[in-house]
Image (cartoon, rainbow, N blue to C red; front, side, top):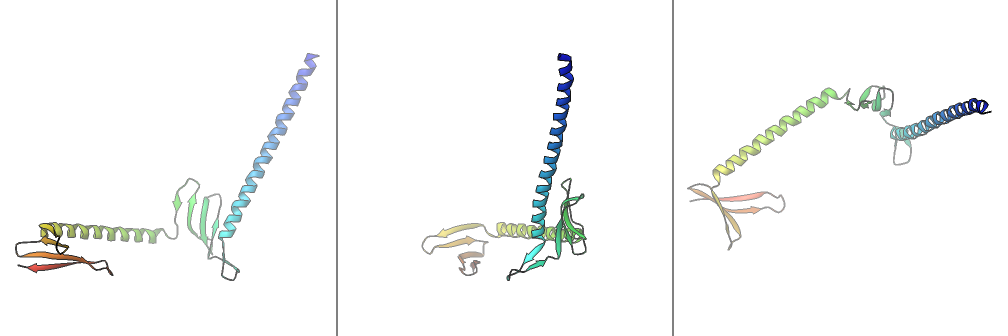
Length: 169
């Protein structure tokens, strides 16, 4: 009797495993489809613009998801503008050259500004020997050299600029 039950239990176990595998697979596919539809609905909302009157207008670009990109933006002619590949690297096809030129131009301007600021700092260190505060008048007095001194510094309230008054001795 025990010998006849063992094969029966094996058949039932295999059937249960098969049914469970089918249910898990279908559940995973349903979950994927459901989330993919939600994600696609979000992309569809991004692909349309609503004006003041409530009319929907198509954008000059659209967002896509495919086997190459997790998220990508293409123009009307389906030419890639920018996207994120599945390995996480960003890709800027149409804008890559212009963006590189703009970034290098901005870096050159930043470098120039750093040089100018350091030049102004060295000039101030070289020209201003000492600063003192006159309590009676409320002015800052700075000695710049043997023949001149800064008699006062005032800040213009409208422009925020600091005006320094020099006096030659």
